[in-house]
Amino acid sequence: MNYIKYKIFNIKKYVKKYLKQKEIDNLKLIITLLVKDEEDILETNIRFHKAMGADGFIVTSHNSTDRTNEILEKLKQEGIILEIIYETDPAYNQVMFVDRMIKIAKRKYKADWIINADADEFYYSKDLNLKKSIIKYKKTNVNVLKVDSTFYYPDNREDFLRSPYFVTRPFLKYVAEKLDITNKPEFKGFIGSNGCTKVIHKTKGYKRIVIGNHDIKMRYKVCVEPADIVLYHYTIRNYNESIKKVKRYKESLKLIGKGFGVHMRKIIQEYESGELKKNYDKLYNENMKKFLIEQGVVTIDRSIPNFLEQIHL
Image (cartoon, rainbow, N blue to C red; front, side):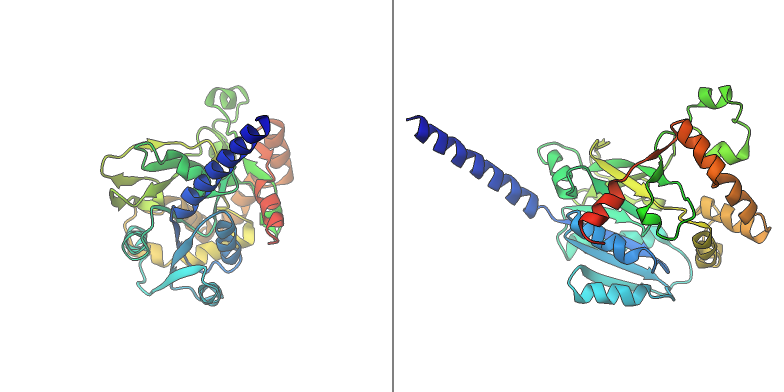
């Protein structure tokens, strides 16, 4: 009798597990990517998110001139990328480009949820499956997940994706005042909230994405911050990449309103005035890194390097 009960228990357990996995498999998650000359990180980004559960990708290449388009075509041939849009508009109209991809993902590819990303953004699920993290909200009214960026702290290595240094706990304002660093410009970016939230959203109820993918307009918007999804943001990888980024966006940003791309405009201004290298070296050097680690602002997090190794990238 006990044996029969044991068998029934195991069958129920198996069926429950099977149905849960089927539910995860049936959820369709598409990632949109807006890229421009991202040959150093693009393929790894896409293969990372594919291994992290994404069902497909829609990519807009904005006037790319390096190997970006070649990489995209290769991944499309493999069936990983669903659609590529080669955008020739000289202006960097991010909202328009991303909105177009969202509508294609929803109408043509029947996506349930969408992540709108840049090539330097890596969405990591602590379950090692983004769909597994998202499906937890299926029986709720939640239609938007807000995820704060965890910024990479560059240590000037070319294989930056193998580096474990991230700004995970910025200085609280009272701590900064106590340390007498509040008015020192090199510490400004390490005090208070990172202030760079991104959204993952349902397609149902979608109205309009906000510049930078920082927010979204939805019908009956219900938003939560998931505890098990982390956004690792490699916005500054190393000095050489900063120079490349300036050259990528210098002209296209001139064609849109001055309220957009504020951070990038500041970097371009520093580059044109000859101050970029000096300011970069103030922010990112061994003494600064050591101090930030001692203060608990920068911590060692091997989630990305470990997962990349696990999937042989």
